[in-house]
Image (cartoon, rainbow, N blue to C red; front, side, top):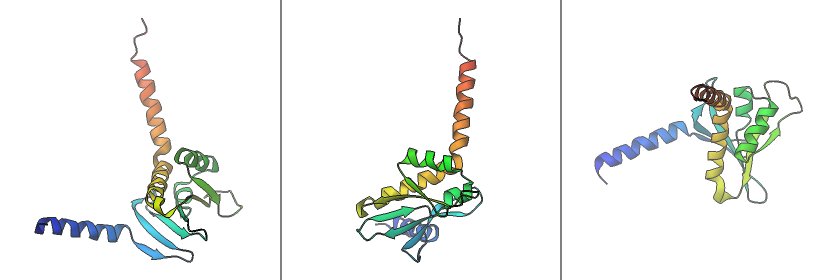
Length: 147
């Protein structure tokens, strides 16, 4: 490996350590993700080892709380990404306290983190993309020559 390659790799590691901080939580570990919610809060995943050896990976309630999701939106996002949800308390008022999560075998941990991250991004941009898509379709429909 050349010195330039080593320096580049070192810088990548510096970013990873800064952007993906890992710390102990009361029930496992938390890891920050290199992504911010629309309100500026850092996205993270909560990782818990279950008694049966599987892993529970969740957004720690961040998507619903920081993006102001409704229960309907949480359900739609979970269906789309093959995830589950669990309300943290019985109060379904805003901001909603609701974990988006997946329980997986250890070998499927990395894809589960990606799925949670995709759901977090969907929570922020899902409606905008949907509306943008609808505007594009309407604009395209106006250009159609029906003669």
